Length: 244
Image (cartoon, rainbow, N blue to C red; front, side, top):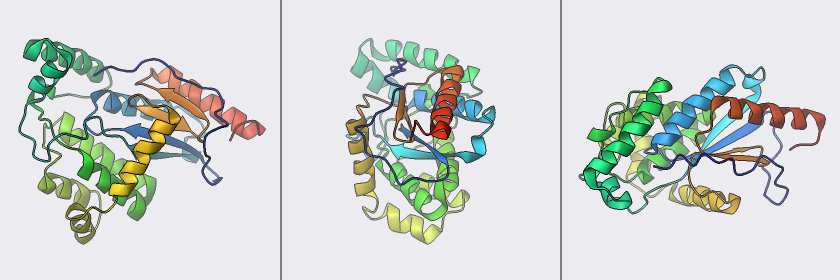
């Protein structure tokens, strides 16, 4: 549950692979749908974009990162027990950590219910996010990402459950038949693994992890002003021809 607050790099990373040049600035966000700091970071980047004059020219794409890939496909264990065991301090220690991130989230307008959450595997949620990106582009993917995170953090729903995921995906406009095809197969599993491999290549030690135009890299749920600075620098250098 570490916020990963340090900025890893905002300098050009010339050694990293670049995507095909597009007429928009691309912001890629590696995150997990059960990462509380990722939802906080999502709200902060949304706030930064809301005040960014070139926001319409920024394409936001979510990339997969599983914090707990060994989590069971059936969610039964309370998160308090999981965190208490992982970080020490038992359930009381876990509740203290939860209280801290819940307070931070509240400042971003989010009402967390972490004390009711269960540990569950996020692979299927990530596979559906890839479906949303393929079928409806970044906008549809962003809508589904928001719905899945809201379901987990503010409604304490089991987002490892296929029934829950199916409803969320269909509610944002994905074709029910395609949703079922993905859920009951291993489709997009390779895409999830590829995202994880790319995160490792970037040097990501945790999430959220933001990359602008495969050039500017920031980690952690950074304050909004840091994210505004990231966008402004990336846009300025892109426009001047010194960036991507």
